[in-house]
Image (cartoon, rainbow, N blue to C red):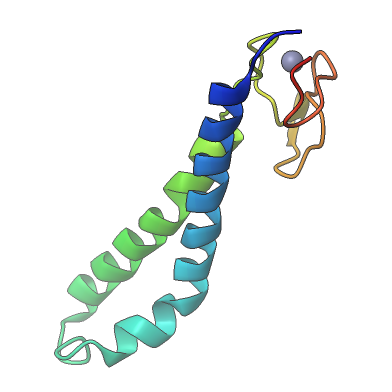
Length: 102
Ligand SMILES: [Zn+2]
């Protein structure tokens, strides 16, 4: 039986960052509107701040989606040519169970 512990720790790190990004995304309108001076920003700067904040929220999610299966090396969440399952319980390519040592 192989030891994929390091890979699953990496997966958990990415998952936790994605959850933090989701929380950040939900709280962004509340947080940004309370930042002193945000209301006085021009529309262009306000748009840039909101887009940067959205990128902060989305990038960890994309990083999670690109996690590679420790056994076969394929993208773990890959379910088909146009589908990914971010909460996949097993590898879409080889069927390795999440957190399994194979
Ligand atoms: Zn696999």
